[in-house]
Image 1 (spheres, one colour):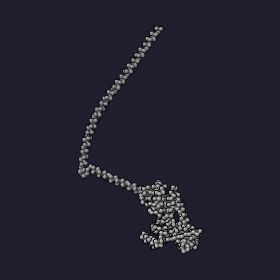
Image 2: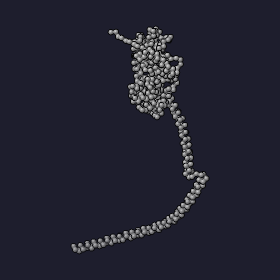
Image 3: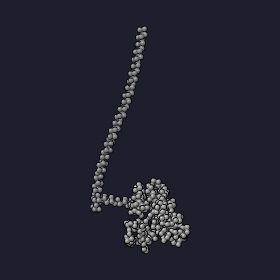
Length: 467
């Protein structure tokens, strides 16, 4: 066993020595290879260093050349600067201008050239825009006017009432003319009874009075009972019906224009325009037309349609009260619109439609345009009628300016003014003096053809009831 163990140990020792020897040889071989690799790398590094040295030398040479060229350029710049300075001095001497003055002169000239060029461009663009806008405006206006089919008529100052027979004329006149005098006194309308068969003509510049008288006379004719008391009843009933008609016309106008939130009082005021004329043109129909035209143009150009239609409908609202209140119809219209809560855009359009103020919104401009289109239609207005009406209104204003006047009516186509006074404030002598004073003021303040008769009526009524 010992021999075998010893043999195994020897064999193990020999195997270990052989393994170690192989490792040593392998290590030596690897070391040799690494040394050879390091030698090669060292050779390469030496070559690179040599190349770098060569490049450094070349760079130094190039830097020297560049420095030389830079020095030459600096010398040339100095020479050029000196030459430019001499030239500038020579130019200043020749032109008599300094550098700053020359710069300012050049800048001014440049500004003028640019301004001229800009003006030319603006003029060209303006001409182009005018051509295009004129064609477009004509197209829009033509289309709108064709779509707007509201009737426009010239109002007259007379109305006629048909009678069942000529015998009725005598009953209307009454005994010693008491019936016709009562009707004329209560309504302020002049009744013309002539040879016209089966008809009576009512003449008055105020269409509301004329309508009340016409309605009352039609009721009297239909009833057959014509006497002063009955006439008073029918005139009062006619007044109530006309008030209802006024309200209804205002509501219809607002509904036609599509305006649902209009103040009730403003609707009533608007309805009064149905019986108001301007240069012979019905103002309510004119207002509806202006609202429609302004609204359609606003829709075409993208403006606020609701504001344009509302302002167009209300633009002449002041004409409903300008006969009874002080101020122009524009001032009164603005006051009414503001009182009843209209928007500032609508108020501004009302105020600007006759250029009392400058229109600063597109809707205000559209209302002004629509107003001109509506008023400018052939046959829509008549100047002489308006002048005549204003003269009649002035007659009544002169009479009403005195204290104690109950009513005043211009009749006989303005050839007579009838003044009804309060009997407790005027006696016979005072009535005579009043008639003379009114006639004198008419002569001083009015221009009129022919003569105007002033009639002062002082009436006392006593009523007792038999029980």
